[in-house]
Length: 508
Ligand code: SGN
Ligand code: CA
Image 1: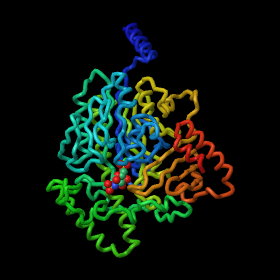
Image 2 (image 1 turned 180 degrees about the horizontal axis):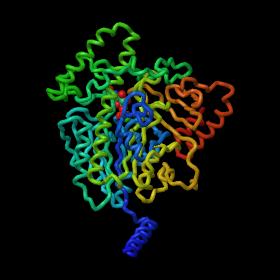
Image 3 (image 1 turned 120 degrees about the vertical axis):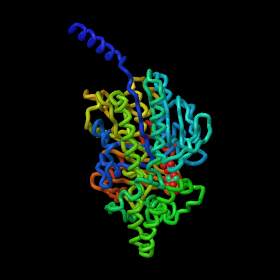
Image 4 (image 1 turned 90 degrees about the vertical axis):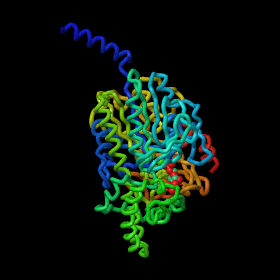
């Protein structure tokens, strides 16, 4: 018997050493506009997210996880390709965009390794998904209630239910029906927590007993920051009373409120009638109104996030009950971060921390020790090569990201990890008037170059100015640092082959 066990162990070890171990299944839950400030694993002061925290506690939390271009469709294209927007071709969300699905993408590369691949939920890339064995996606932004889905034969089918629940139902259904002889790669594309933050009926009013602290830079006056002063994304001016805050919403419209069923409509009308009374009381007091809007924004956003976290729990429970938990990598991330009132804002786009960062947690029992913290700077271009790395699959050399699997391996890295990250945002002027910009972030500093409507630079000392309020670009003491950062920026631009940015940089 002992001999038999020994023989088995030797055989297992040999298989492992030549890379023939069972490939892990991979689930990526990719939400929309869900930010670190709203996740308890990232130290949120706003709400508890037990299921996202569970992934982090049983696996790893990335303390420094960023995006290359803080906006939806471009972020998804970066995730699929592992390449910057200027190379994958999708720079912004504009209606003319058309992601070229015939290019190399992570699902195609995993498919070559016998993975079954699927994308379910929000997609937002306009062209139909390519390279997935199965897909069922929301058209454009999708709807929270009774959402339409585009199916593989290009039909649009209306579904009954709340979008976050429906996406989990479809995902679990696909998992149940999959071919169990091969590993799978499933992306669950969540609509939550995108604007206009429509909570599930059961979550309406979840945060009504809480008053949220306002961020210390909520009343930012944008001194010395032209781009920040010209945006249109403030809680004060941009947020729409009717659609965002749901006061006097038109339930007869064919739009988002028109999709509520009769009983859902009743629940919404009842709940927001009480809120409308609050509004009536303070609407003529300008400061009280701004503070009230901020509270209402957070209450709706966080209530929407509650369903998101609960549905992540459903997926984790499914993996437990089917014994898939051990050999399935679960990643939770968002397409970018979001402002929870910092600088007075909602939305994203700017290279400031709240939207440059994105949540990233990952579980892979056996390989990743529970409670691991990764402090190195990772970027969403790293997801595709890392998934390939975890799947023990070849990583094409034209992929621009790095395989962060190496960060979990104890041995010293052969090639040192990156010391800086490169960012490039394009979409202007609609819908939020954020000037295009590119820049570099190191552990200590951030240098941003705005272009388009105005050309200017911003420098932030991230150690001494965590809320990025003081643009130091003209401060004498920082000039040597600025020179170094400009060199670093140019090196990154050349390394990532961003010829448009290089032209702008050299034309000043
Ligand atoms: C919509 C939103 C914007 C949001 C973009 C992009 N307006 O246009 O506030 O910035 O989507 O979001 S809304 O009134 O229609 O909600 S993204 O997540 O797709 O990039
Ligand atoms: Ca988004």
